Structure formats: C-alpha cells, structure tokens
Amino acid sequence: SASPHEIGEFLDTYTDTVVNKQLRAAWLRLLANRNEWRTFLHYYTPQSDPVLRCYHVQAKLSSGSSQAALAEARGLWLTGKPQPKECDPVFNYLLLRDPRGKDLIWQRIRLAVAAGELGLAKYLGQRLDVSSQRWVDLWCEMHEDPMTLLGRWGLQGDQLVTREILAHGIKRLARQDVGYAYARWQDIKPRYRFSRMTIAEVERTLAVAAAAGNHPRALFWLDEVDDTLVN
Image (cartoon, rainbow, N blue to C red; front, side, top):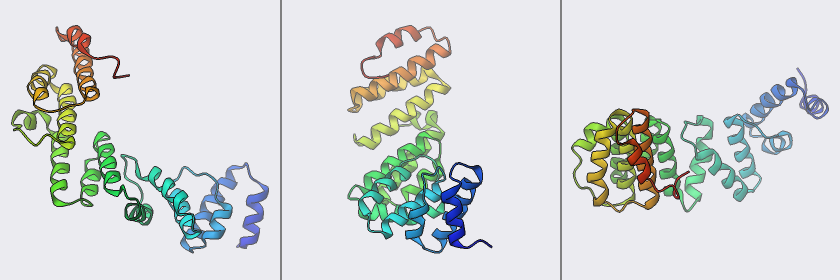
C-alpha cells in the first residue's frame, strides 16, 4: 500500500482530477479516525460532505482555533435536516461553549419543523427543559394535524413560541381548508401580539392558497396583504 508521503505527493501533484477528490476524501477520513489533525488540516480542501466538514471543525479545535471552529460549527448546526453522528462531538462543544446555545437549539427546531423533520425537532427538544419540550411536542402536533389542534385551541400564554406555533398551524391549515384557516386566523389574530411581518406572511399564505383553489375571496384577501413586509 502507498505510504503517507506517496499519498501526499499524489494529492499535491494531480490536483484537478476525480481520482484526487476521491482519494483526498478517503485520506481525510483515515486521518480523522487516527486523530492526526495537523496532517488533516494540511490536506483539507473545502468539502460538501458534512462528515468531513465536521472533522475539519474538530481539527481546528485541536489546533487551538476555537473561534473559527465555532463559527464553522454554527453553519453545520443550523440546518433543518439531520446531520451525521460524526458531527455530535462538534455540536456538543458548540452548545457548551456558545453563550447562545439555547437559542441555537430553538433556531434548529424551527428549521426542522419547517422542513417536516419532526423526529429531528423532537430529538433536539430533548436538549431543552421539560417545559420547553412540551412546546416542541405541541409544534409537531400542529404540523401534523392543524385542523384538530386549531379547532380546540384555548388561550395560551402570549409568548413568541405560541405565536410561532399558531402562525405555522394557520399556514399548514391553508393547504387543507383555506376558508376555515381564514376564519380561525380572524379569531386568533386579535388575541396575540403577532408582529406585522408574521401577519403579512400568514395572510399572504392564505391569499395564495385561496387563489390556487379559486376561492371567491382570493383577490380581496390578496389586496389586504401588506406587500412592503413580504417578498
């Protein structure tokens, strides 16, 4: 088999070939498994594989570049899709060291729910206290069955997470029954301090769904949307 020196020479010589990319990826994985982080950093080039990107953060941490590593770790963390288990050490470090750790968890929960990755959202919720976990479960329930949950919705505390769950539910319900979604929105909107941006986003979603379904009030609802606040 080739020696580390021979592999390095090949990578440095044949830089723009498919074989180089494949060999480099395999070489980087081997170096990471051996914890040879200094050599890893020497041969690392930007990668799309999240495993190699997470290894790159670990390599930076081992070299003492903690701030640069944290910035890169945040980019890997903030996705609504599951990431490979090889990223867990990096994410654990990020949430331990970043003073905004709890906010980062909530940001990713939002992304996961938006992407329909409810299993990921609930898994992330386990990193929060029991009270917060209940909100995550409620958010997932709203995603799956907005008609039932909005139909029996009682007045909850007016806080950001409540408003986010309600707005998400109305948008989801608009796909199923836009007339009922509009009626529930008119009942709910005055009882919570929704931001102007959230109101515009919800009402645009309702109007677009109404237009797609040829609802007779579609143009009227579309005219009500504050276009200055939405794209």
